[in-house]
Image (cartoon, rainbow, N blue to C red; front, side, top):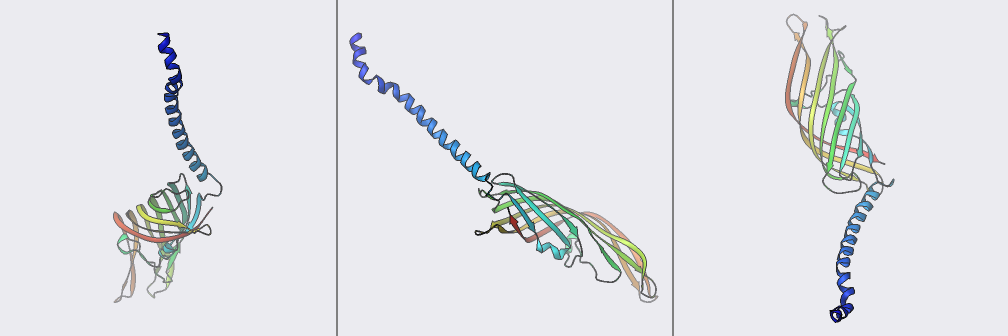
Length: 239
């Protein structure tokens, strides 16, 4: 028995080092994975990485909305975007969605009313900064209001007015692409999408009876849901 033990002495270190070597190799592999994740998290957390963006949307100006957008990156793929602004004169309208252009007559006074956006964005590409192809869902509140001043029998505008108000609550889904410049922090954000619009409309209808030359006014109420299409380009600056 002693002779057998003595014979095993030369190979005993190799037998003992086998399991230890395998365990050490596995630990080294795990360490590399942890270090990669930590390094990527550290890269995203650096002050040199763009995580905040201020944007404007010139394509909605002609539709009577002037919002200022703020996007904040929450992770390398997820960000939140909010916007606040006002509604003004609508020059284009939107047809079937109820977003009608405003008249330029002297009897129409456009009122500045609030506009708000709240949404979340998921980037389909893994990037340290908020850029690439994305899916974006948001809720939008718009209030387009104006006063219609009534006319007398001579056609002159009086001091009496009726309030025309169109309140829209939208749920929207966009597919878009945002890109930071390679030389500075300016960016563009192009998107298209669909939405469901809940409309609460109080419309003032003005009518002239040519025979009696009298102006008449009627109020029409409408509450419904319609589909809406969206297309636009934002420009902004990241920091």
